[in-house]
Length: 227
View 1 (spheres, rainbow, N blue to C red):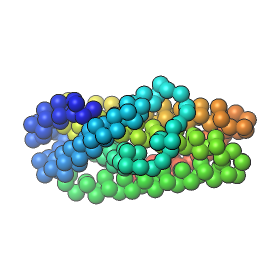
View 2: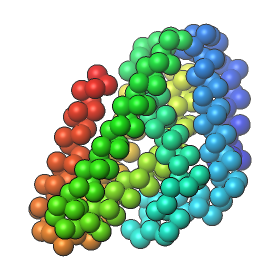
View 3: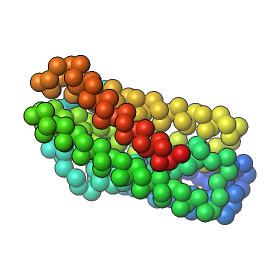
View 4: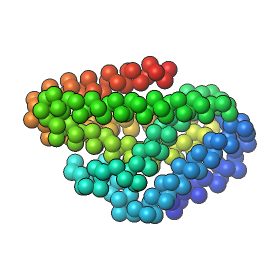
């Protein structure tokens, strides 16, 4: 990621004034936010090369975790923080026909909502595991979703550069970005469901019902809050 990072940053930097979406004033904070997120990923790639490579293989690996993936350290915390900020910015870019300088406050609002949403959802997973006496399965399912949050931080970053300064019809960029985010969420949901079904002692249809309650209800609340 770090090796090729500036290859896609610099061309967009020179196109900033030509972007139909981003006025020059709004592009200032947007550009430096994206530079900060990209540098963060690049530094993590350099400092934690083995863990970074392991994370990249997440969609195609088994469902076992090592101790480094379960603790909240600089690597995991930085990726989760940037993932929340990146998703908030992606929602802002997809929903706005033209970005204004004051829209940084909207991005902060979305980031706070996403952070509270994920915290609430994590508590629901832990509570469900406690109530149904199946804590290991529900904790593993939540860890899987947390891993996808970190994985998403890597791949949303180039999407944000494209949405911000890409050349092409604005509507097509927004639709493509929205489809990518939806597919990413569905993939994470599928992996979470498989972990829950494999490790839980409850009946499969019970787990599917509980998973719907844990995922669909909070998502509906989230959509209501950001709309």
